[in-house]
Length: 341
Image 1 (cartoon, rainbow, N blue to C red):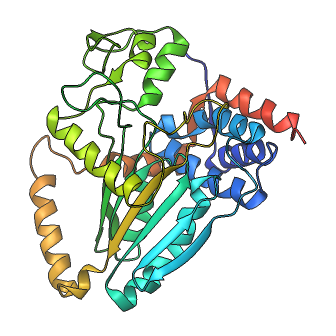
Image 2 (image 1 turned 90 degrees about the vertical axis):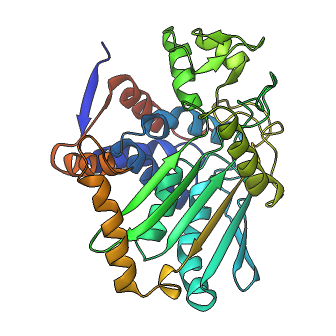
């Protein structure tokens, strides 16, 4: 059984920020990353939380990801924002989008942000939720290193290629939908390989296209898309938006999000947001969305997407966050070691 420790949210955030700042990462970037990883950990997205400290800091130290880089934003049309992540961490670039898109949308009604030369962007849903809190509907797409074959094929072409959607609700947290297009995220298979545990059948195929429960064989093979051919088609859609439109690397060109060697991943993300109240009066929108969502909430056994996160957030504020003890010790050691240069 894994030994665990319970930290307050502030203790966990400070620990992660210290480890990041000690690893050739600019102070304000370390703060941005730590906020994102804390949010992921609280919401139960463990593969995007504290467990990322090891790979993020190793990549910064090896210069695979430039921890000193600053993103560059350019408004190329009234409703189009183009952001060069500059081979750095993605989170500061998204903070630029949070700041700029609402002002753009106040004039245009709809706007988009295209990110290129980017890296792992964490929980896709958190980016759209941030915009939905300001009254916008938002959709995000991101590509990632190859892990999934096109339907009927055997060679990996697409990544897990997440997409997310968020919509505001009156006097409540936004509705948030977040999904990877593979049946499980790749971090879960990497974790199983490290621990020597088998993976459930239905997660992945080996290099010959056969079902496997061996995580190492899965990492050499491909991951299975959600919904079969439909999931693979959605992955193609995401690849077009996040890589073709932005000019970012394809999943076949991107390097691993987990290892410190090689060039930057150079992936892309695409974010669209619009003001629903430019189309429908706010009181009408509020009444209609709550009527729709109540049909789900009042049905026995049904729950709204993202609702589990709301309960976890409340629990974290009251009781702290429970995390593996070995990851805490690892982060403390990284923080104590200091920068390499």
